[in-house]
Image (cartoon, rainbow over all chains, first blue to last red; front, side):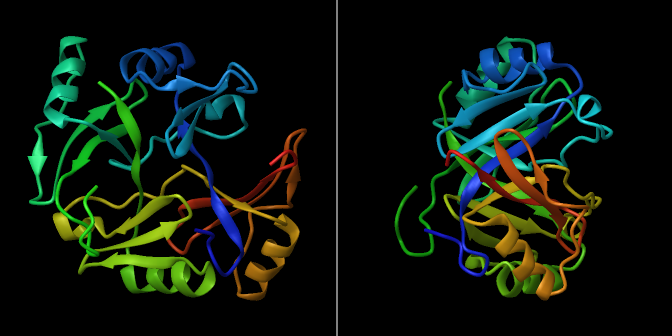
Length: 133
Length: 119
């Protein structure tokens, strides 16, 4: 569905600012298992494809501005089972927050190596139109 | 662990009513759901959640995510937003692969009008 008003078609990407590309690539590529776009433009701007959105993992300090982390839960990644994903990341040595349950979805936050708090997320309740996730 | 998709992207706000006006009346996004402390909007293929963190006692911080909105014509979209009072961060940039124009929502969350030449 296109965005009306300015005629936007879609979200092309979201920037994920980091401070260490090697650590970030290990987190997003190896631990989260995201698919790295082989056409990423440079070593300091690596794009990961997450189904519907591209995450552009990049270092601000090589793009002429200062690093600040994303506010908590800026990016909610849909996983099949939050508890399972939490256990896997914890087994890899990461600290994952307590899993919460809102009554419609479950979530747990985890920091990437730069301090961006990513949300592992799974909705199980129906959407307002009655459809299920 | 299989990550399937991005369920939503979240921006924080200090003034939900102001944010609602910006995203619906200026950018023209459609509301998916609306609560007392947040607003879910359809941004193409993903949900944008605009949330007031004070509702759960958390601090506000603007996002540097720079959500890139794909438009057919960056110059035309920029002119339309400027006519509605939106101020842009500098001139439109032309890289080797895309054109981009940076702006912010009223809370300072970074956004971009974006078009790859090959898209």
